[in-house]
Length: 487
Image 1 (cartoon, one colour):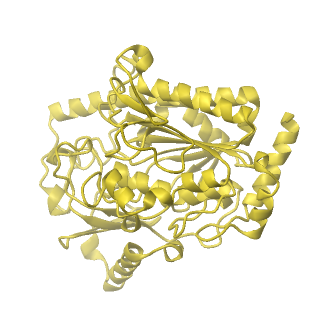
Image 2 (cartoon, rainbow, N blue to C red):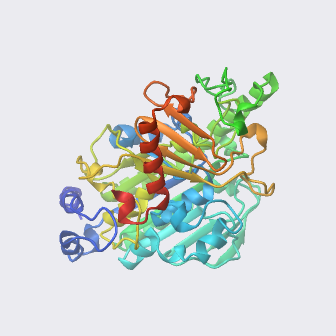
Image 3 (cartoon, rainbow, N blue to C red):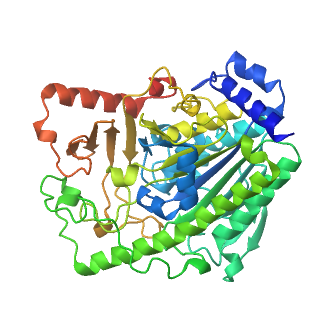
């Protein structure tokens, strides 16, 4: 199809998408009509999912920065839990942890086994898009507890998934049901291997004139944050950002699990800086993979009908609130992550400040693909934003829910006390405030407008009316299902 004609088709498709359903149930009549036009009118979707990437790493990713210039940045995007498996389970299903049943990385309330036992593998954006005629591929990391010898889940046309791919060398990939071992040669570097396979998948899908959904799910910058060979030694003097929360001066207002933390030592700070350098080096390969895939799609003209979505499963603190490198807290360092989207009809250089969450990715992907979303999706489609509009009912707050503390030392996300290991909590994040309730009865409250770094816990100064409203909103979210979560 000539470029000009393809651009016209993409623009027409975007006009139809704007009327798509933003939640559960069947697509609207106009979406069904669009589906009848044929699969060639439906866009491709490239979903780049990083592991433990915080916004402070974006300055080292020029291709991602160009995505911000060419597309849309969601500046108030949050995850439902700042931990790998529950966050990824939410992305795939569009459901909160209390509805997926996945709160941790393993055991009776988490991991791949729990995800399957609860039936989640049958209701993901992959099953919906594949049923609608998409080629679908997952490359890299799936869910904690999945091993390459296990079966390929439903919904995926192609599957290139590792178990322990964190070192980026000496791993095994399940390649469409066949286990393939990789070594420690430079060409075995996992992010690069996934990049090559992703480009090949996209090329074959374009040649077959079939819309595709490609999830490139890398293991970096999660520790050990192994960089590509070409990137070793870069940023030799780089240090972790010194925000106002770094080595926080006064922790007396914090809950018991954290307020007794001593100030970071010089040795600990040096380690934080060294690890931040490793993290910055490791994301260079991710950025290159994005650029290479974009270039490949440009060569065929398919880029004009392709959405790129970039995000992370959770953030990462490094020195904030006297904690060494880690996650799992309710603070913005851990729950607020980048979400950047480019594609046909997406306004260039636009920033959306409305509250969005990883519950929204599944319904967004299915809306873009004119597919029927899974039943009881808790999130909303972000497609109206991508067309320069706003949903009719923007949300007032988002939910974060976490089970802890983690006690399994073999868990790749296990955190000892210096890194932070919070107990079970639920949290409400609005555009103006953060409210946290711990299972032991302790609470936190931060006025984001006055205190964006969450330094002063002022929960004791709230009026009875304010506290009642926050508790009521949080209680409603922790028990909601489907459309009730969208109100």
